[in-house]
Every structure is written in C-alpha cells, then in structure tokens.
Image (tube, each protein chain N blue to C red):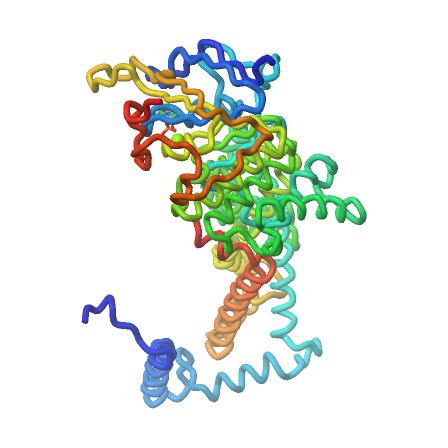
Length: 278
Length: 273
Ligand SMILES: Nc1ncnc2c1ncn2[C@@H]1O[C@H](COP(=O)(O)OP(=O)(O)O)[C@@H](O)[C@H]1O
Ligand SMILES: [Mg+2]
C-alpha cells in the first residue's frame, strides 16, 4: 500500500538558522512512528509542519497523495504535552465540542436530540479512555494523566486519519505513563489511525512504535552557528513486528511499562541511539 | 521566626483590617472637635451630628421644592449613566479586543490606532463632546466610553493574544471555523478576564462620570457635590463621597461574585497556568 504521509527532501530554516535538513520519509498506513532525538533538534518543528502550523522552507509533504493543506484540519488530530484541552469546558463538553464544530456551523452548539446523540457518542469514547466517571469535571480538576486521556478522546471524536502526538506523556509519573501506554496501544489497534509520536523517552518509543526514527545533527560544533540542521540518522522497524489491529497476547509483566520488547538500559532521557542496537 | 513567616490568626486579621478605618475616624473626630471648640460655626470638619442632619435631609426626607428624595434621584441618575456607558464599553471592548487579538489583519489595521487613541486624555475631549453632542446624557456617556473602552480593548486583545497557541491549533484540528473558534473557544474564555479588567476600570469610570456631571448636569452625585460646594457644605459632601465609595466598592464585589458564579472553571484554570 502507498504511504499516508510522504515527506520529500524537506528543509526548515528560521532566519539564518537551519533546524531540519534533508528530511525524507514515507509513512505507511496504520504505522505508529515514534520520533526521538535530543532536545532542541527539531522534533516539534517537524510535527508542526505535519500539522500545517509551519510550512517547510524547501521540499514537499503530501498526505494521502495530495499536498498537505495550508492550515490544520480535522484530517489530522493532535495531542500536545500541555494546553491540549479547553479549560472552560467540562470533560464531556470538551469531547462533544468536536461534533458541535462538525454539525453546527453557525451556533457552534447542538440542541435537543442531536445534542443527546452527540453526548452519547462522546460518552462511549470517554468510557473507552477510562474517564466515564469524570464527565462533569473541569480539566483543572483532573490529574495530568486524566487530562491526557481527555485530550486523546477529544482528538479521536473528530475521527482523524493521522494522530500527531508531541511528547504527550512526557510530564507523567512512570506508573501513570505505563497505564496510558496500554490505552494508547489499545486505541491504535482499534481505530484506523496512523500515529506520529514525538518522545524523548526511548523505551516509550520502542514499547509503542512500529517504527522508531531518530533525528540528530550530524555536525554539532558551536562554531558552526546555525548552518547545520538535524536530519534522520536512524530508522528502525521495531521487532518483533507489531501489526495494527492484531494486539499481541500480553506477556506476564516484568516491569511496569515494559511489557513489550524494549532495548536494554532504555529508561534514559536522552536517546543514546548506540545503546539501542537491534 | 522571620517576619515573612508570621501570620495573624483569623481574629487578629479582622482586627487589623479595622484598625486603619478606626484610626482615620478617630483622627477626624479629634480634628473636628478641636476646630469646633475654637469656632462652633466652622464648616470644614463638621461634627457627626451635622452629618446625621444632612443625611436625614438628603436621604430620608423629600425635598420641599420637588418632593423627591435627592440622594436617590442623584444615585439613580448617576448609576443610569454609568451602567449605560459601561455596557457600551464592554461590548466595544469584547468585539474589538477579540478581533484585534485573534485576527492578524485586524491587528495590523487597528492595533496601533487603538494604542494611540487610548493615550488621548479623555477629559481634554470633554469640551469637544459638549460642543458636538450637546449638554445632555449622550456627551456624559460618551466621555466614560472614550475613557474606558480603549483600555478594555487593549487588555482584551492582549489576553486573547496570550491564549496558548495550542488551543487554537487544537480547535482547528477539530474542524472549527474562525467563527466557531471565536464563539466557542475565545469568547467564553475572554469573559471572566473581561470582568477582571472591568473591575479595574470602575474607578476611572466614576472619575469621568463625576467630571462630566460637575460641569453640565441637573442631577447626579457629582452634580450635587459640586453644587453644594458653593455653600462649603462639607456635611453633605463627605457623606456623598462615602456613598460613592460604597457604590464603587459594591460594583467591584458584585463583578467578583458574577465571575466566580458564572465561570466556575476560571479559578482552577487561572491557578494551573
Ligand atoms: N518559531 C521559531 N523561530 C525561530 N526558531 C525556532 C522557532 N521554533 C523553533 N525554533 C528553533 O528550532 C529548534 C528546534 O526546536 P524544536 O522543534 O522545538 O525542538 P524539539 O522539539 O526537538 O526539542 C530550536 O533550536 C528552536 O530554538
Ligand atoms: Mg519539542
């Protein structure tokens, strides 16, 4: 099958500073791509280009064979590390909102039977992410992990083809993170999603991804100024192969969050790619 | 223990809050007593008995000529002007603030203009308003709007601009149009913040109101103060000033109550950013 997202020789420069150079990448349908790399190497910048929040300086990105639209849209959902949910809406309101945007162009609100149908749909999704009990709370009343579950539900109600995640679980405690990894895996298996997830946690990358891609600067001398950007230095298929929709039977858990093949010594913050040989 | 770590108990805090008021009162009583002992017909610092008589005359007994109770007539006139002016200012502040804060074309076109306009001293425009709009209600309301609205616009625009960009991106990935983003994301989050800036504008609004009433009016709290000034009637002026202060304070409290009741999410959201 042909690629959902195809990135061809993309460069991104800010003023004189090259952030990314020569990025070429084909992302297969239903892939779960984990993007790792040192802090400041341009992972967020890359994701923002996939979102159409930024345009490449050079090169082209296509989605489903067509050039990427000029602005963000419902075909690509997103979860950020922070500020992903709306503080003024309840949990239920945050999820219903996507349906209201779709079906109520003028008022932005649904009423009567349509509203009840939308709420039912939202409740199903909330139950799926484990927030069934919290529908009347405001985001500020939720823990960090619950907020990110809400952000996932909110993004998924719009039924995006592609889900973009920017260090979505980076601020969570390890135990909470393991639980939300299980949820993330389940959602990816159950829904027709292609996922691109930025993370600085290599074990997270290997425990969720079907493919792990590393960005790095080939030259990183301070004297270079901004003349060299980061590019793809590693590109692994995760083995044994994960196939969307075919969850592997869970093995007995040895360690929280480590129920999948992960490279040894991987609970490090900075991806030392060398240590992650396959 | 360091001073920064020493806290009063609840009772002590209440007591401390009363102390400055009591001190001012005592200082007044002493000053008034000293002056009245020297000259019983002194008008500058009247005794409390004179205040009681003046309050009875202004607030409790109908005026002999008109049959109205003057304090209520003045209060109604002033609050009507203030209410109308603040309502207009809020509407202008919301619409222009959101549009300038959110839409780059409007920010480019209006941002600098509003920044300059908000620097025009409103009182300097008062003669122009009286000349062009006449001496009636319109010019008084216009003065308050000119004084208050530009500040509200700028504050709103800044706060809308400060919204996390992630929220606007997120709304777009849910398929929202610009209009839907305004009415479902930006406006509801702007309203409680607008109340914050409106609270700060209550003082200036009263200033402009009293200035306009002092110069051309037949009623209003500011009109009355400046009218009785001719007779050095401190026994009327001081209770009026106290009344205006109470009204302004109550407006502030009511806005605060509206903010917490109508926007229950706001306190938590403010604390977590
Ligand atoms: N809007 C911008 N203008 C100028 N420089 C930027 C901008 N956005 C990001 N950068 C720079 O691009 C580099 C990569 O940033 P980012 O993509 O956030 O890194 P990462 O997400 O990998 O930590 C950083 O050096 C940052 O300073
Ligand atoms: Mg980043």
